[in-house]
Image 1 (cartoon, chains in turn green, orange):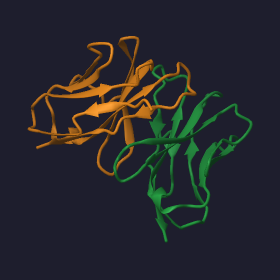
Image 2 (tube, chains in turn cyan, yellow):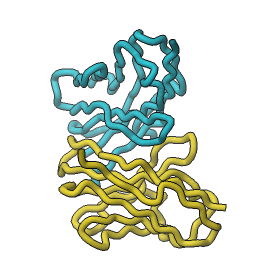
Image 3 (cartoon, one colour):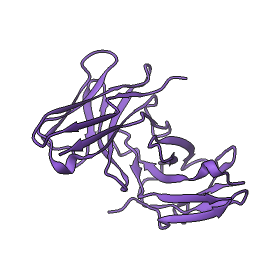
Image 4 (cartoon, chains in turn brown, red):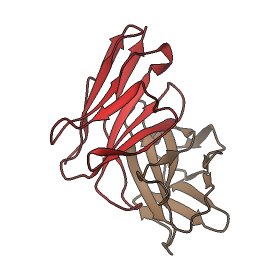
Length: 116
Length: 115
């Protein structure tokens, strides 16, 4: 069963605008962690932001924020003031405590293109 | 800044050959991982390694795959007899945490092409 769902295969946004990348997840655990990674065309995986299931505040890291709605099981990434360098693939991931190896399970990703 | 390093960055091999991909995780990290990403697809979990043994593996990680930490710094993924469908980017990652809160730090990947 799909644990992480990213429904937007591709998104466009104009430079300096904000954009929201959707992520929904499926778990029966009460404790879990949610992550977003960026993968530019060069291929590396860059950690952006983390949200714990018990965190009461939405996570923020600079221009990145995570809109966490626990009841809806969604963890959308918001990028404010988009820059051309934000063009990349974005992956949502979840880690569940039941995972003996603390592995991250990734969604299929959203390709973001920032236009001038 | 500490980082995960992987070698080689790109390897081309013939079907049926053995391949070893190498990784040097961040030195004080405890958990080590291999992931793969077939071109244009999502990042898939292969295996996690802790305390010198496999702690979890996915269905992809069959008998053709093995991992080893031969010394205190290297972490290797071996594919015994490569198949065409093993062509992918292989990412090594490490994590310092022993809980679900720590992020994974990824290497830049090793691209494997099987001909």
